[in-house]
Amino acid sequence: MASTDYIGRFAPSPTGPLHIGSLVAAMASYLDAKVHHGQWLVRIEDIDEARSVPGAAQSILQCLANLGMYWDGEVVWQSERHALYQAAFERINDFTYPCGCSRREIADSRLGTSSDGAAIYPGTCRNGLQAGKAARAFRLRVPDAAHSDETITFEDRWAGLVAQHLASEVGDFVLKRADGFWAYQLAVVVDDAAQGVTHVVRGADLLESTARQIYLQRLLKLSTPQYLHVPVVTNPAGEKLSKQTGAQAIDPGRPEQALIEAANFLGLSIGPAESVDAFWRKATSAWAHRFSDR
Image (cartoon, rainbow, N blue to C red; front, side, top):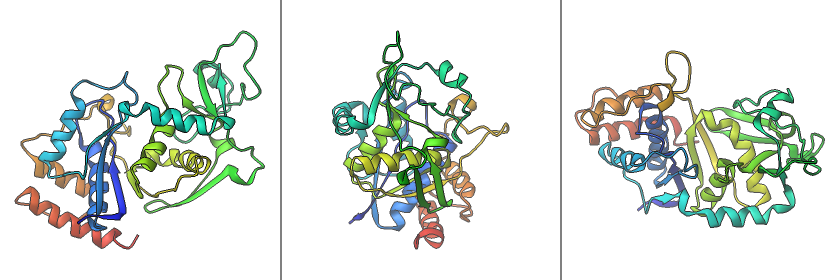
């Protein structure tokens, strides 16, 4: 029986079929859960309904099953959880404010961009909307640079010690977007807490979001999971592999090949596998050798 001492998850966005880049993240989270005799949940992160592709979620779930990756419990869909996000938002409304700035205006402030590519917000609307401006989004006020809570430090199981200065490296960040959708940062924190997630294993492209999520967890008085961010697969141009950068869907007729390719990327020595079941036996042993103690 799976242990509740370890609850992990894989949370794909249904913007296209599963590809090798997303399989790497799925495999790492799946193996870590199995090695720790824990639960492995699947959550469909379709909160951005404008980017969701019809049928993509079902395709991803079917592909996971074809690859021998079976989840525990029911699949959770973010699009069905708006009430949870609203309730969390209301709990911290003393720390939020409406923002009337456009992306162009934020970019023109020339404060630069954070390490994840987002423009650093200059705090224009912190003290109220400017004359003639209407609220477009709602932001979370981060501590000032001199405040002790402004620097978030955590130990990542892959990257090691990570620290981020929220005020200077991020600025006040969005919780509810101008298009009316809840922002990823809020939704993922609420969902991980609601599902009892204890360990988050995901791609390193989300490493820079973690400090913001930990700050939200503290404001909402939620526990903080352990984090492990694995390297992301890139295309020849060095861009993160995605549907937009030429990622090809996994061939359902050759599951062992896709699994071995993902394992090799993660640095696991698997060798040939005569079946999907044989692959997972080898991969679980290889992951345990590297990560069972951390």
